[in-house]
Length: 224
Image 1 (cartoon, rainbow, N blue to C red):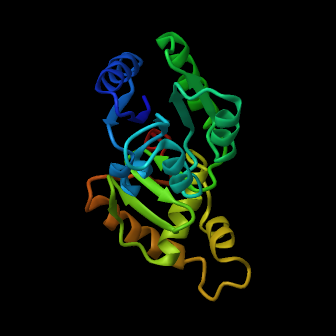
Image 2 (image 1 turned 180 degrees about the vertical axis):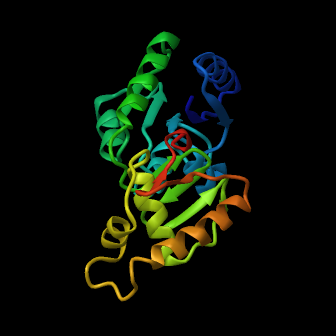
């Protein structure tokens, strides 16, 4: 299941997209104005589908506004199919371009294909279960609410989540996060993990698991 944001000023198109993509098990949020799209919603989305011609902010402008901050696939869905417009949209960082009127089966197939390719290492954003990591901001969120992690706590969470399911010793975590020149002892990792768990439990999640005699891992079932 993926989280999909669709933005189109045609209510019928929004309804069609929602019905079709929900059949594939996705959670779909639709909006009819690009200027209603907020950063928190982009952080939530695994895929964004945009119309181009909309009142107020158009799809090109919205793509330009969000592309540098978010890695998720962006697909343009529009009647504006001249080669110049296609080149402009892809040049702004869109991943695909589908002309109206469109075949719903093709749209579903393209969305699925782009989501499959999202297994690559993220550059800006990573979603692991209920935790979203903003890799540029160096901040973590649970359902859009920021986790109050220290720098060291965040770095440990990010490292474990990037390697979800793999177990690392305290020494390996210390070296990866703080480096050889770090000022703390690797035993400090234990204290960091203790604090991380308390903060995650306070929002109802426990993704960090102890592998006794070895170290710690971010549980695979918490990878979303």
